[in-house]
Image (cartoon, rainbow, N blue to C red; front, top):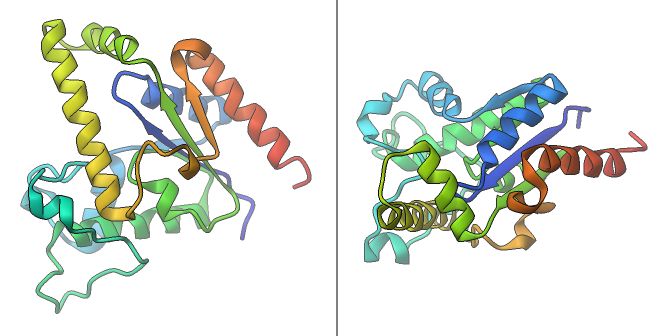
Length: 209
């Protein structure tokens, strides 16, 4: 395994996790990937993103999808398969891109179940950014024009979709602290504090490398 460092950021809506990831990447002088991974997966596979509507961490909340898991096992579906043009295969190609990038460069990635996909890479640092619900609501209202009640429902729905997406592809609970190296409360540390905490953790963990 090379010396590239990968930092995966999972985050509750309104916690500022994406901002923390972007700040960290800028501080370290590396790229931060988010939805770009979808485009790269589309380019690599030849699958048109428009075929999937909105495949980004969304999964229709039906009894069927709650009952079924499609846990990622490291494969992509071949072009001659009926399931090649499926949202499951788009996820597989996202995973393929993340693994290939890890061989080429250090980077920060937002979401994408990257902590699970890259869990066997010893140079990955997985982070979960969270905050109290009221804090997330207040931050959400700074960005979007909604009533407080609307924002509360929006956050609950968005975080549930992320949890369902994570469960479907990993078989694990998205908010389980055991899935991550660090769980940081952005309301207590602030965004810069979260960046410094991640850097401090990396300095201790990788000190002999």
